Amino acid sequence: MSLITHDVHSAVTILLTGGIIGLPTETVYGLAALAENKEAVARVFSTKGRPTDHPLIIHLSPEADIDQWGHLTPHARTLADSFWPGPLTLLVRRTTRVPDWVTGGRNTVALRVPSHPVAQQLLREVNTGVVAPSANRFGKVSPTTAEHVAADLGDDVDLILDGGACSVGLESTIVECIDEEVRVLRPGSISVADIEGVLGRSVSPTQGESRAPGMLASHYAPRARVVLCDSLPAAQELFTEAGESGVKARIMWHDDIDDYAEHLYADLRAADSDGCSVVFAVVPSASGLGAAIRDRLQKAAHRA
Ligand code: TXA
Ligand code: MG
Image (cartoon, rainbow, N blue to C red; front, side, top):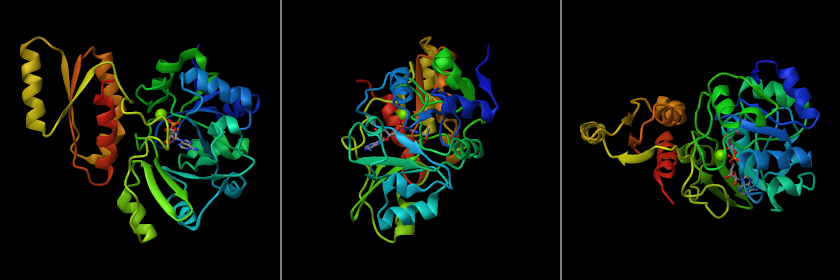
């Protein structure tokens, strides 16, 4: 029996009765549970195989009262006003409503208001906070279609809500706003320049490994080895050499940077399903969305 459905009401009922579901968002698919249901959140951690000290993002509808969940600084409020609903996660001091099992006991919470219409409908109907880490097993490639979630998690989820292929394709930009500080902990489609543009000030660069556990050096990794290439001709040369020595390989490259992000994870998955042993990935320039793609490619290429 297929767990994949377009029926939002069934998904809402499952969440409200303590189940876990695959949830479409504009970035990647999430593995969702009610934030305040301890057993359901525990099942999210165990299904992913994720350490419980790697905290989860709480997702809220555009109408939700954010102040019930987090203390937004003036900078955080400006970013929320500019980029929500959308692929931005704000890391702020938490309120007493936020359960310890979501944050691993930290005094901060990650909050996001997604723009995907199906996610919004679900969040409105459940009318409370929903945790949703990416719906992949820990350390593996994030899912950008309902079928990816089914392939990864199968019967371990109660239902997969199908909202089509994710339009962004990369996880949200995470920005920590504590006191006067603004720091980008995970690059995404909302770039450092976008953030600096609305705040009118410079922000601390990415590199928040210790502050946002889960952003380990090796992550987003397919089975195939990922080799980073500076240019398309360099990738083509390596691809030809691989072919000559009987190694099944694939080139990863999209001219359009939005297309590259949108298809990045699907391309990595396709390499595995086609039985490729190596992927030659052309690294885009580091401006804007390119920075986020480089970050994911470097992690996919890293071998512990
Ligand atoms: O686009 C996204 O953000 C997707 C979709 C489903 O919304 N979700 C997602 O969740 O990427 P996840 O759990 O795969 O990544 C969230 C990251 C993790 O690295 C986690 O450690 C960090 O955010 N994080 C969450 N809460 C935190 C906190 N209180 N302090 C530090 N890091 C936190
Ligand atoms: Mg993830």
